[in-house]
Image (tube, rainbow, N blue to C red):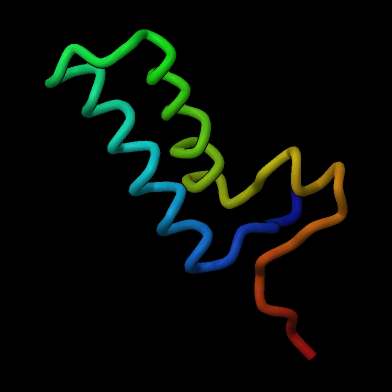
Length: 63
């Protein structure tokens, strides 16, 4: 798995994932909010399978 998530993308995914999970845990959010695990996991692994399928990368390229 080659990293395909850049810095800003990673930060946004972490914040969104934590916000959704916190919503479920602390504010009785809907059960679908557990989907926050997905952006959190992709940020932690620095790899998004959907980006891989679509040929997208937000990482800076090294010359």
